[in-house]
Each structure stands twice: as structure tokens, then as C-alpha cells.
Image (cartoon, rainbow, N blue to C red; front, top):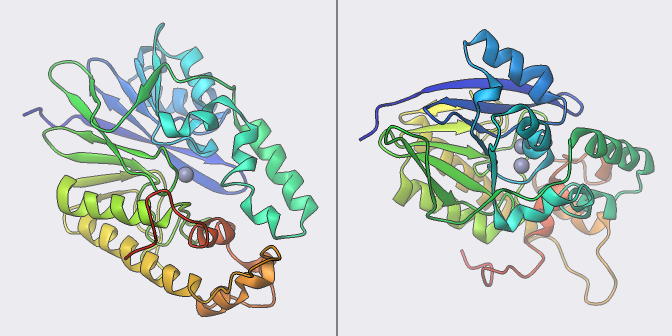
Length: 318
Ligand SMILES: [Zn+2]
Ligand SMILES: [Zn+2]
């Protein structure tokens, strides 16, 4: 059983007030879990590592928890600054997000603009995405569930596919201590900026949380953001241990159940397309102002629409 290793958390700002947590793993083949956005590797990660006595140019593995821009925006830049031959790893189901800036707006980041008439907000989001992603690339290592990444001296990360937040979300599990680097696979009540969970496939999200809770049973969680507790009021730490781990997983399931109940209030019209107003009953059930869709949380439409589309994982059985 491998000894616990030193983990250096690095706080990377992105967008308008967002913060993403990148983790450096001090192992014989050093690894970086996520990269922040385009400016993060040179502007934030390199100086933070230097201050901690490490070097970005020694990093051998750039491990993406998933393809969202706040996590892979810096992947191209980080690979340029890392050791020669350093590999960017990502689950195959999120490959398009690494390969194409447009895929972000066509996917999770653009759903709300199908319902909101907000051209300035759309232009602002588009500009942030273009600027925040350092390059379009293919992963050097395409990951699948069950893969193992050797970091030297018997230290191994196991890849656990935890889809739902995105199709290619994974958790990296440090074998031995059983620490999980979950990126955004666990949402509870969303990040401090979003203040609402983001998952595009509710059935897959539930299944991933249950698998983490019952089967993987991590001893510690290293999260991609500080998350709000299930009440949506209190901001938790990005690193959770002990009883806080199952509490975060159960809390995520509880919040998901509330969202499912709210989504059941939405009447899907047989012919005409859904509008922002179609979502008003769900917004009201969750305590938002029914008549003001622009005030609903940024991920509201992306997450709620997941309940209205047929899931690849089958019918929305609970
Ligand atoms: Zn994400
Ligand atoms: Zn994120």
C-alpha cells in the first residue's frame, strides 16, 4: 500500500469571479490534476509550484478530470511548460471539448442562451471561452474506466468514470490512501459562483454518486471548486475528509432529488419548442422568481433540461 503523498492545491481564478482548484501531486512522475484556464499555467500554477519548492517543467502528467473550460483551458499551455513528452489525459467522452472551443458553447455553456434573449451575456461568455482556452488539442492519453496511471515508486491513480456533470467526467483515485480527485463529478449545491448544481445527465449523475458512496468509498475528496452545502447557504472547503465525504455524496443525491421533483413540474409541450417560461414552475418550486428567468442560476437550464431529454442510460427511473 502506497504511502500518502504530498498534494499541493493551487487556486486558479477564471471568468468573472470563479475559482478552480488545481492539484499538484508530488510523486516520482509528478502530476497536475486539471490546469485552470489559459492564463493559469504561467500566471498562477508555475509561481505557486515554485513557492512550494516544485517546478512545472518537471510535470509528467496533466490529468483532466473532465473537459470543461475552467479545467482544461490551460491544458495546451501547461503541456508546453511541462516536461518534454508530458501527457495530457482525458476521458474519451469529453474529447470534443478539448479539441474544439466551439463545443463548449454548443454544449453545457450554451444551453441557457437557447432560452434567454441575452445577446450581451452570450457575447461575453463567448469571449471568455475563446480567451480562456489556450489551444485545441487531442489528448495524448484517452482514458476509460478502470485505467491505471503509474506515477512511480508504486504510486498509482485508478481512473473511475463518474459521468453526469459531463459525459467524460472521471475521478482519479489514489490507490492505498483512497483519496479521490473528483473535479466536478460531485456537485452538492454547486460552486460558490454558480450556486446551483450542473449536471447534464441526471441518471448518470445519480449512478456515479451512488458508486462513489457504496463502492469506491473515498477517504478524502479533492474537489474542483469549493461547493455549497445541501442548503445552498454554506460554502464548504475544497478538501473534505472523514464523515464530510459521505455527507457530501449523500447531500449531492438529496439536492438532485429536489431538482428531479422540480423538473417534474415542467409540462413539455407536444409540438412547439420549450421556452424559458416552460421552466417557470420548476424555478418557482426551487424558490426563484418565476417571472425573471435572467435571475435564475447560470446552470439552471442546462441541468433542468437533462430531465426533459431521454437519457442514454435509460428512462429516468429513480
Ligand atoms: Zn465542470
Ligand atoms: Zn468546474
